[in-house]
Length: 509
Ligand SMILES: Cc1cc2nc3c(=O)[nH]c(=O)nc-3n(C[C@H](O)[C@H](O)[C@H](O)COP(=O)(O)OP(=O)(O)OC[C@H]3O[C@@H](n4cnc5c(N)ncnc54)[C@H](O)[C@@H]3O)c2cc1C
Ligand code: FES
Image 1 (cartoon, rainbow, N blue to C red):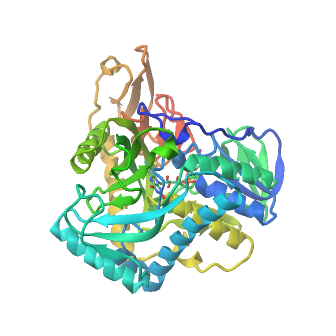
Image 2 (tube, protein in one colour):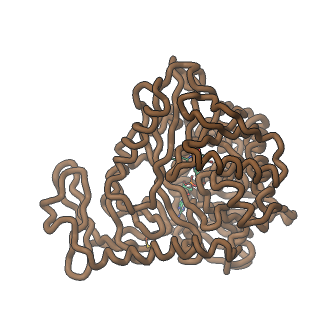
Image 3 (cartoon, rainbow, N blue to C red):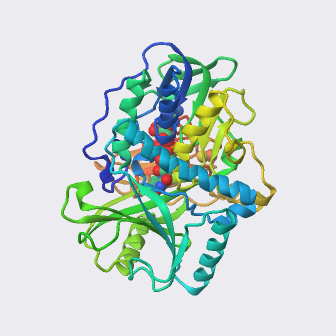
């Protein structure tokens, strides 16, 4: 699996073999074309194939090689934006539906793993939301009231946290949360999809989307897939240029894995109420073939392309980890990835706004991408099969909520503010000032140039203007990539697209 990062590859990826897949080399027709082989696209493809549909799955790189392979794999319906917030935005019924749908997604993963005999370390465990100070303790009370209002009765307040070093204050205990080994699951799901007649083409980037009664997707090679229904599950939609990108914001998130003595931390999920917040879970020794358990701690999120020293986020995470888990030993893994935060907290899953009726998207994972991706599979399958689904309205990508207008404005003003980069000075005056293995911005007339110096000291220059809507990209020294601070497009050191919404490489300088 590809990893642009200088940091360790997530341990999930080790030891998983993929079923051989191939590039699209012909024009094909099918009932449903799914673009994007992460958890959202693959689950949708699998469930539709199970319904007897002829499904083609197109993936630009490798199956699970996007954000899915970087997850920390908490499975939770205790949504991290909080139920008081969700009740305010969607009402009690909407918040209840959101909670139920994520709970159903956890059950669905368990059901699929059982039915397809996928050994993926799935386990139902408790989740704990804990307070770090007295104000947060009050917030906990409000959270408990809100979950009771939506009818979730078996959530309880515990006076003591199961890990005493985490906090001396109370915590909320949520039952029936889960964890699993995502890449073992993805490998099993891929095999099950192919066994059901699904066709998979990897290393096949979709570059053009034509809507109509028959939707036609063109791959980079020029070959096409014509289908009655099209699902675009590319984490952030690459078939939409503006609308959806104003409704969600890209954030980088960081994770570390530390060894801890076996049995000292319980097998559970934990998360706090700080901003940026921290999320924690355990990978027990027996699941990883080691003599120590692995403690996985994530957090320290920031807006993509808006931190000059993202490497410091790992130190902050480690500092926090050592404070809260004094028994922690060496850091075995460090990695980062991207999540999209929708302005009103729930993912966008359904018909693509302003498009033909047979074009669907799944995006806005909001750090709950494992369950949101599984919900996408269930909801989009129902829509395509012509069945009613009570979650359709809350996840409708076309929804507009006046209550989220403040957040919408805040995120879009932040995007507008990035235009300042056109007038600020460059970070270097001359390419020779760029050190090996790093990238720096240099002013050239009215624009900026992205200069990368490779390990051999050769400088490579390309335009720093993002090919999506023209913001100036910034260097990410953790991932060795050029990241756009506006809608999260990312490019490799030489300017080639890693993730959209941009579809074209950075121009030559
Ligand atoms: C560090 C980290 C920790 C996380 N922790 C959790 C957690 O604990 N619990 C949780 O629920 N979620 C978590 N998430 C979020 C979760 O991992 C993601 O939301 C989820 O994996 C997204 O799945 P996806 O299928 O939407 O996208 P992806 O997995 O990114 O899949 C999209 C795919 O589309 C492909 N693609 C893109 N453009 C094209 C194109 N033009 N043509 C063809 N293919 C294309 C990409 O190559 C990619 O493989 C975490 C994320 C990160 C980064
Ligand atoms: S991602 Fe939109 S301008 Fe770069």
